[in-house]
Length: 209
Image (cartoon, rainbow, N blue to C red; front, side, top):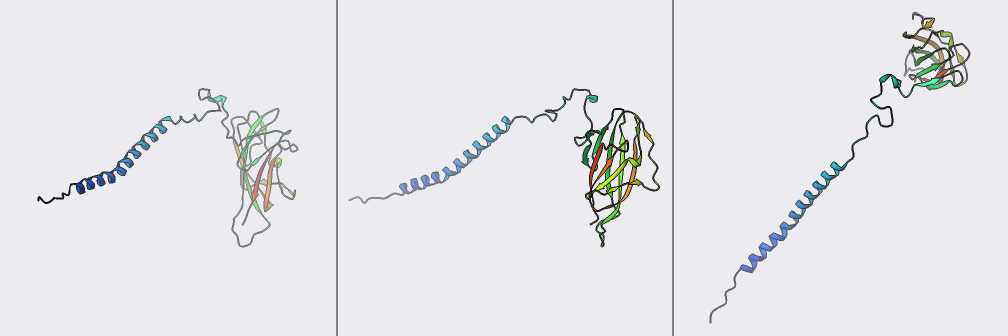
């Protein structure tokens, strides 16, 4: 009687099958990564181009003199409708005789973080005028300041500073400093070119803490 011989072929086949099964998830991951990469590339290619910077504004081919070169913070101020803006921003003051661009910055104070914080301090503002379209009268007495308690202050020219011209003419630029002792807190610097009708106001805060 010939004895039966048991071979290990089935075991080998099982091992190969197991290896194939083990490699299948790896291949699936590779295919998934490649598919995602292709889709991402398509998404990038399909992304619409950004709108031009001037979209909704003036066309870039227009002559420059048709554009408004002042920043968006420049307001128009008249005696009938005075402009109210922040310190450092410009106001295009308009009258029937002329217009002029006016900016008020400040106030600057002697110091902050002092051990003793007074209720009032010396304030200095800088007034700048330019772009006049006609003779603009300048008088420091036409500037006034008011605090939250409706106290009116009359700032004067800083000692030692040159006086501004009595009249600002087209093509000229004037800058001068005004000073007053004012209460700490919020306030408004105002300009009335004729001494009566305010055309522009600049909001500010006096701080010494």
